[in-house]
Length: 210
Image 1 (cartoon, one colour):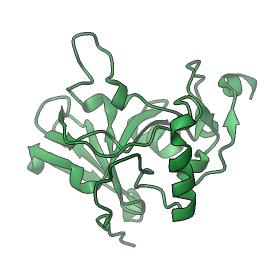
Image 2 (tube, helix red, strand yellow):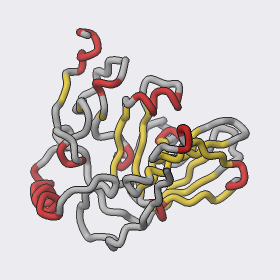
Image 3 (tube, rainbow, N blue to C red):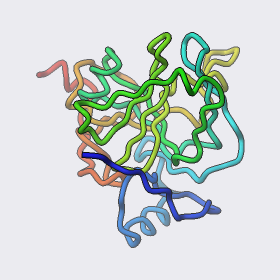
Image 4 (spheres, rainbow, N blue to C red):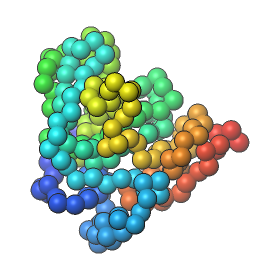
C-alpha cells in the first residue's frame, strides 16, 4: 500500500510545539505546553518551535548535499529493530523536521529510496554512490527524520561537539535494542507520553540483566 504525506497546516508558532510526528489531542498538547517551563530536559524530550537558521549536511562522499531549516522538532536515539538493521548499527541518532524544512540542494539524482517490500510506512533515502543514509520520510507521521551524524554544521565543529539544539533528549524503543547506554538521558521502553507512548522508562543496565 502507498502512504501519502500531508503538509502540516499549522503555521510557525511563537513558543514550544509538540513534535509534528506524533498525533496528540489539542487539550493534551496545551497541557504539556503549559507545563514545559518547569519540566527539565532530563525528564521529557525537548519541544521546539522552528527557527530560521539553516544548517547544512551531506552524505559521506559529498555527492548529496541537503539543508535543514531551524531547530529540529525533536531529537532522539532510536533503538528499534528497523533502524538498527538498516543502519547496521546498535542505534540511530535522528532529529525530526517538517517535510518542507528539509531540502536536497545537490545530487538529488544520486538519491535512491528503500521501502521494505514496498509496504513500509517509511521511505528511506540514501546516496547510491557511497550508501550513506540521508533522511527518511515518515509518511504515516508527516515528518522527515534526518540522520544527525550527516549534519556538517554544527555537528562537526572544531570541538567535535553537538550544538545544544541538536543533542538527543532521550532514547526510544530502548527495550528493542541490544547495547547498554550509561548516559543521563531517559530510556523509554517504547515512546514518552508526550509522543503518544506509555512513558515507561527502563534502567540504563536493562540489557545487562536480560
